Length: 447
Image (tube, rainbow, N blue to C red; front, side, top):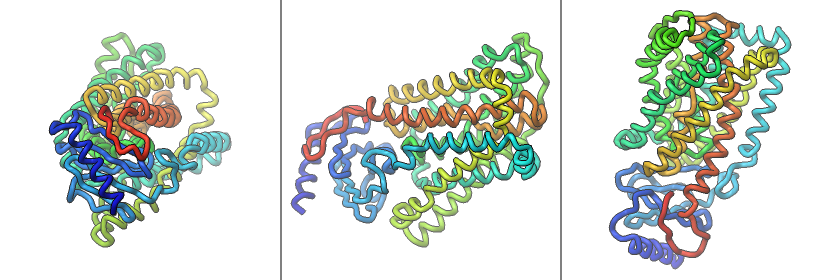
């Protein structure tokens, strides 16, 4: 009791030093025995972070119940959560399994590539397809996205829609800058290879609605904001994808002197991709969130069930990577020059979009979790949709289809690098709000 009173007194002193006007950025935090003091803006919805983002947990009175084994003290603008469960992770860090994620993925890539040299293996996986959808890949992606979507606080999403800065910035990055940047990068590298050029353009037009949820989870981004942006991109994909692909390939490329294959995209093909790769995991996640919370309660759902299903994401990711490389690894090895030509614009695109989006959000005053989410949604692409469209238009095994396959093979290792880079930014750019444990002092600044 004495310790709690001392902590409460420290909070009130911190409030007094800051004055009545809250700082622009959510900020002062003290890390002491896994306890976090965190300023909470009244206009922002509460946010809950897992151990991957430093064990943060902010709330306003009545927003959330305390997790089991936790204590919350409510101040005017500060909340203390003492979480006694470290989730098997080091404080402020990743578990040893997550730290070796790059190794696991490299092993999956190498195993798949080795197996792809056996025609029977490729034919067996290819045969498990319905229309343009490969069932093993579809199952892997659905299972991979289910845990992050099941852990979303869907009741917070309406509040996020009212936050103009992250929503507007994501809209501009995804649907104005992104497609045009990929177009001109692809043109610079592949103008003498129009077959590959068209495939890369199809990738640039397809905004990510799938694996970005996983990268955001690994980087400790805002799950609720990510789900909101993914839902928005899904709706806009139905409306804008065919328009962008038609305008850039059928109109702009010929205007630049590039001979192209005229394409025709139907609404149904785009709708099918969105329904499979986003609709199914979204429905499963929302159903779990609605039904299980009602039966067992929030404490059990977020404290136990969410932890039980979390390993599914990594297992399904490794399975999906293995299947992709089993299907196309042999072609990648045999066409190294074409691989490099297609990979170069994508590699530049990923870094430019990520860094540009992250720091645009940062200088607009967004907290780390929002910066990371905006950056990953802007830098990622929907390769499943691009591949399905390329196969339907150019045919399986065509240069156009090959260039879309290069996409995820480049994106996966790059996104792993960007996850680590994002965590470095969280320490460097938001470092001045952290203090050593036990001081009882508060320091303003960026968070």
